[in-house]
Amino acid sequence: MSEIDDQQIHHIVQRVVSQVMGRSQVGVAPLSASPVSAAVSKPLPESKADGGKIVALGADHGGYELREILRQYLTELGYDVKDMGAYNKDPVDYPDFAHEVARLVGAGKAWRGIMIDGAGIGSCIVANKVPGVRAGMAYDLSSAMNSREHNDTNLLTLGAGLIGVNLAKQIVKTWLSTDFGGGRHAQRVDKIIAVEKQYLK
View 1: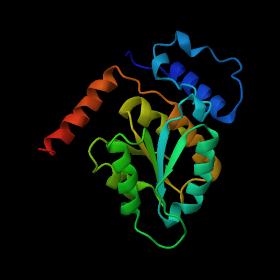
View 2: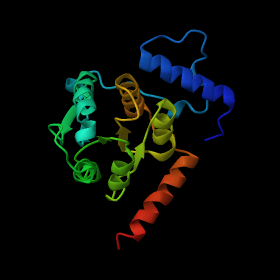
View 3: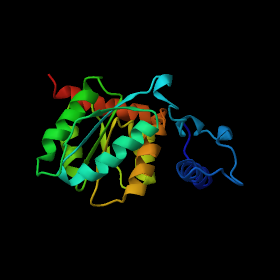
View 4: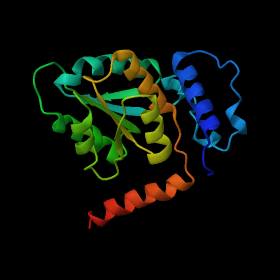
């Protein structure tokens, strides 16, 4: 994959924002002509009847309210949600829930995972301890897209205390619909996997 220039980045960002906001792109060149077209967002599944994919969803007490909103949103987008709790706002420990979400992703029982705590950092650390998981924290559309295109993340962590509901929905939609870029990034992800394997012996 060739390097991305500023104009191509601008086009990608405009397309993502337009897709997330539900607006058509006016005056934006089609991305099919770009060498990065393979890494650009793909359509979300339209319904469960189309073979909706399983997304494991979890949160601690700090992420409970946002998790409730995102659970409904994911269902509306056509995904099957495997809800791992927490199921109320009573204080709990985020490592327990992050581990459950990551375990499903690492075992191939969920296509992707989303975990929400207060800042998103602790859950990301926990999830990355589970073999087969590449967790990334996102706090805006660019970090969500980058984690998919460059790192092929399969688990997203969010900080409910850092972002609002609308931004969280946009991040989730962008992350779920963005393809891995492959190319030079594939070699780097392979090295991440190789490091993990060293410590599984």
